[in-house]
Image 1 (cartoon, rainbow, N blue to C red):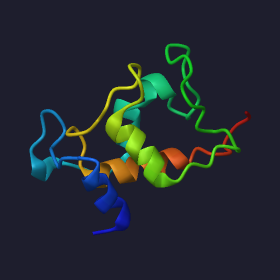
Image 2: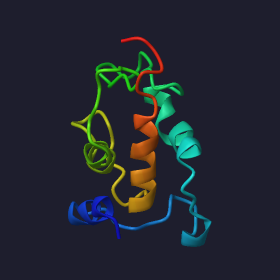
Image 3: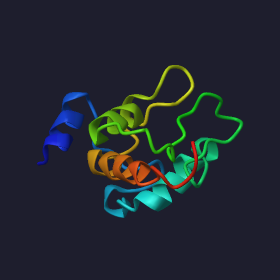
Length: 110
């Protein structure tokens, strides 16, 4: 198990299928997961929609968090605005999604 997955396990990520899926039907397809679960607020291109006031602009070339920090925010949510996905995604899905979010960096302007 990778160090990132161990850290996710330590913060309490539970391996569970997405709602309505069996464990065998789970996928690690981060782009599809992002579009279905994140893009409604964070935008399909990593630029937040107006509904998500204060949300991070993933395309900002100066934004360089470690993947573990992104995974932690996905897992635990942020304040009362971003929901936590703990128990809804597997540690592998969370890591894959965090890595995918980081690919938006530099794709646009600040």
